[in-house]
Length: 159
Ligand code: ADP
Image 1: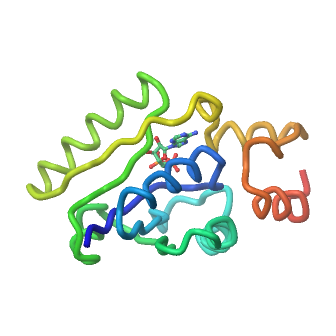
Image 2 (image 1 turned 180 degrees about the vertical axis):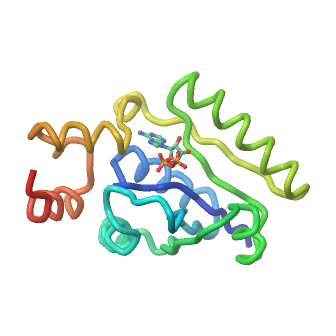
Image 3 (image 1 turned 90 degrees about the horizontal axis):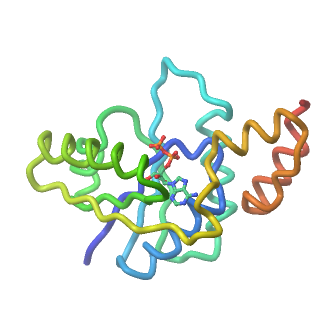
């Protein structure tokens, strides 16, 4: 049985993240989507809010678990008993960053393997930071995020 960890900030989760997660859940027996956080860094949403929104957005995916962790991803992977990481790729600049990250993780933990999935073209330009930017300028974020995220942000973000 192969379990993959899909780590990220997910602040908030977008349709692009969800697409990678869906594909990953078809490939692996189980995928753990894990919010990585740093207690000293304040995000846009709290970790609990992000987890709640991810849980509501992945309800239909039976082999997906939602979790969070602080610290190194390789240590979290070890704790969860797996050596496979899942990451998404959008652009060449993602590739540059992900290459470095993957090689660093591999240096830190020899067994770790990162599997990359390429995003669908329609999700190519979607990022959490872009969603936050549109929201802060009162633009429409509905096309970019799962419904639970849209509903929550509309109801709770008094921008
Ligand atoms: P991080 O802060 O670790 O980059 P993110 O939440 O931004 O975390 O992203 C987590 C993963 O999802 C990364 O591999 C990122 O490249 C990927 N990702 C982000 N947005 C998209 C998207 N629109 N399509 C496909 N993959 C994406």
